[in-house]
Image 1 (cartoon, rainbow, N blue to C red):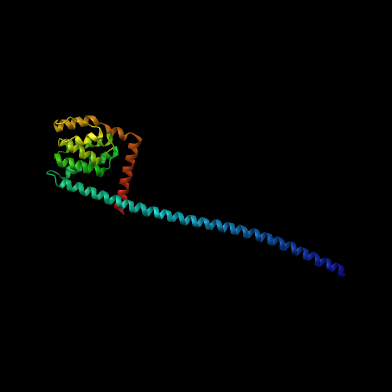
Image 2: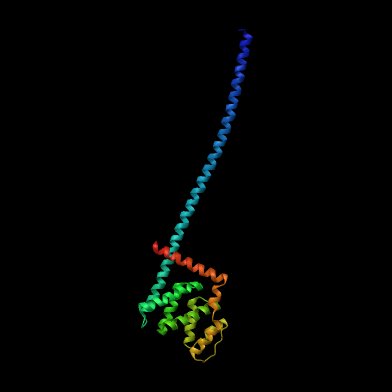
Length: 226
């Protein structure tokens, strides 16, 4: 083989090798970039997944603590109910069942059952009569919705009217005849606010309050389990 041919073969081999190396370099660079990109995506995904799990755990912990607090508050209210019933002359277990059943039914009107139970217990303590306690509590619930009052405040005002003092209601635009018999004044108040709690329960606000009470009771149940 001539020297010229040998040189051409060497040059051709060098060119072929150079092309192969360049192609390998491009391919390697492309693979490296893709690997780097995919690694970044996996890293970010893992980071977000870790944050998501952490947020979920934090949320569950917060819910658990809140539920336990709700359960504790409910226990406190029921302890007050039991103490009030124990102080009555005729506060037997059957009476307590009737009042608690009425309190549970009040949830449909958007009233918390523990609040209602306490209201009923106070009225029963005063009257020693289940039916009268139920009627007085109904007036209190209607007054509560009519004047946007807490049930406890409305119950206290109904008790004041029953004691012959209806002046506190003037602040809310309810004027009762002064000096009239307490039962007549109560009947007058009942006419003014009758049906308010039922009507309110059919509004969006009323339905949202009912939902809130139901969810609150679920939290209390969860808190009790925890």
